[in-house]
Image (cartoon, rainbow, N blue to C red; front, side, top):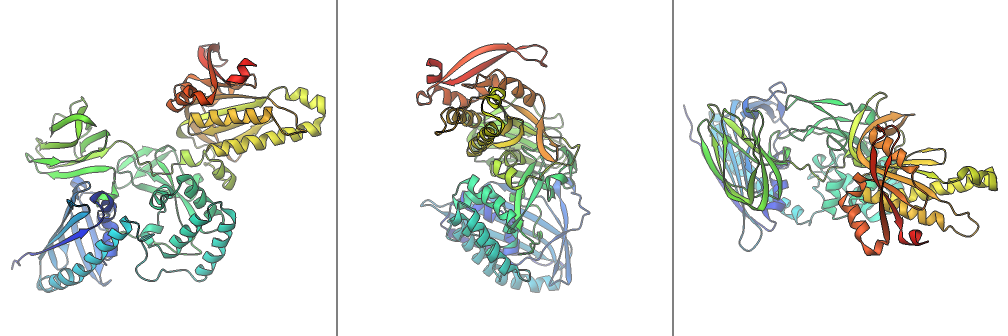
Length: 613
């Protein structure tokens, strides 16, 4: 016999804004865990059904199996989300959940949370009022209030609600390793925060510690927190992990404990795609507690909520012939609208000057090629003119800037100092995107050896390496290798490399008393590079590296030779245009050996006094 549907509606007035609460409230994996839902498992063999439907299973009290088909979540970030579950096994027939976050006129959020539950049996008829109407009501209220405090930073971390589980001797190891970290780091206050996080945070927080996200939450320097996490790994507090990020769902398709486990090709089982790995987007560094301190199990409590794909702004399921009008808040930038069942997509550019009313149509004929100009709060008229159900997905094209990518991390001196043995598997070649490559060489070093003797000259050369390494590290670069008196280094930003070299040349030209002045030739080029392992160390090759090596020879030691790509960088242009920099930039053309004898436009950058002198 059919049973009546239960409907529960709870309303909360919270102090945080919808934008602040969304990453917590819409993280349904965390929310389910925090409200006492058992861990779920995939019952569909790792494959998604039509339009991302999933078959999932959990066990109530560890004994009673409950299995359901979960419809794709629908949401508009950061204001509403919901999901429908149709049960195959267990006491319920169907459950619908809907959450709405609305801005209060005086600030804060009015949160409405609704649950519709339809029993399938007498057990469900009896259990729903107790489990949802009493127990869940209490846990929902407590969880939302706690999320509000976390969003306002009144709680430092998402703490474990029960006593944190340490392995035998784990607390003692945490204390000892924490003391080592405090002695080594230049940021002891941040070290205390990290130690507290390891000691008190819940397993979901600790299973994937993203240093840049942690820095933003602490309102601290990203570089300082990344450096701290790397140091914490060396003293045994943390373990690092390299995550291979799927370009489709942007979730971790797999993880590796070292760069040796990262390969040029990877697979995302959930999206059923293969993808080419690159360091600047698809390899992210994260951390977790060392297993000798806390064993962290990354269990799943929900597999399809909005925060699984935080780059997706809108997801809506429309039946064939259906249409919907939606107001969607956008940030300036580029977006793509696509569906799960159609190839390609429609590109949109959001700006204050864009259209306020926009029609978005999915048809069997495919997507138009033109890019739509839309406003920052457009009203979308979404239509499904195909003959089948379509899951509409509007995704931000820009990748998260909270990712500590392999391209960025491996180009830092602190990483190379602490993890000198981190390298790719021999023979593996992986793109790192664009890097600024530096080559330097001491001018007249052979003459110096003859003039002052090998031992004294060697001391000068070693000192010059120290000056170089310090300046490179201060500008967030990394010394890759030395070749005789020469150096190869890499930077993520061209202006950082230029500033570092101008400083080094100035220091070496005016040394302390008793030290001979040195002239350092330097050349910079920016462009795509390939990461490889050479002599058991992470190295780079490609035409960008080859050109940078050619430019150093054109320097006199009083200047830095930069390529057109470096000169065109906006930050470099700003540096050269700044009157306080007192720099000159002289353009010249030259043919470079190995580049088809093509004449390249280059710039000679020098301090103003060097030119006048």
